Image: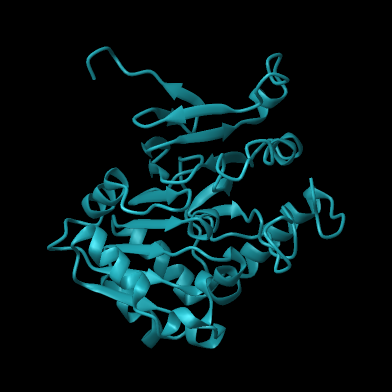
Length: 290
């Protein structure tokens, strides 16, 4: 495991808990182990392109193309995204949704302002574009905007994101170092935690990353690892995960990693249509004909 400097994992987890304790974010009690109490997550492994199954699910979860109100968050893409219409146009083209606003800032003060979060108060969906996930953490973590994202879920909306927009949805931020994505645990380790007790990787098979999450899950048994290949997503509602798209999703669970078959394959591959119980950490077997 490549790290910028050696930091015991338990220290990182304690730091995350302290940060949450000091933040203005309202953490509510939940019977769920990982997923949101209300609303849905759509976590995409990158290079979504025009993959119909993923965009159709986003439209459905956002309320349909005629009713959806979408906020596209471009922080991960860097400052140029503030004036480029390309990200908004991509979502419009693939969804048919017309009510779409761009949200971009590099100021924590602005992210903590009521004026800035106004579009999120009406939003039925949020879409985080790709780039570098640490930028999203820098500008939004533990701010009023962060709370406004959570409020979208509370109202039954959807939070989606591709690549960096996938990883930021976890609680432990993977590949979050400012020096480069090859550093697995670096100078940013706290995600927005829409998916609790989790760590998320992307571009999994395309970039030969399928073994990268194994050791961190071995050291942190409470975390669930999710690795997504490109043009592939997971839809999370409550504690149920369903795979959507063209390739595979890998699930990294501590018990499976330390089990007798771990040496052969210390993760579980799921494909389109397969479901997984996040609370009990097992595949949901569908009845024949479903």
